[in-house]
Length: 86
Image (cartoon, rainbow, N blue to C red; front, side):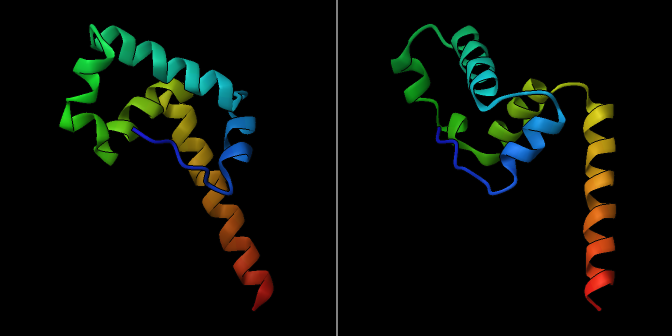
């Protein structure tokens, strides 16, 4: 599993009151609870699926309702910026 850096990730984490370290720690704790060893995790093909990582990461980011509100706010801001450029 590999976490890549998205240009807006720090801003998203900031809005949610999280740091990259907190998210990484949460992910580690989840996977440590799911697997008994690194070898077992390393041999699980599903652990590398993007969908799997997204679902686990969402659980580390917080309440789903807050995430939906954040997504709507970010969409509104980007739509507003696009309208300003036109």
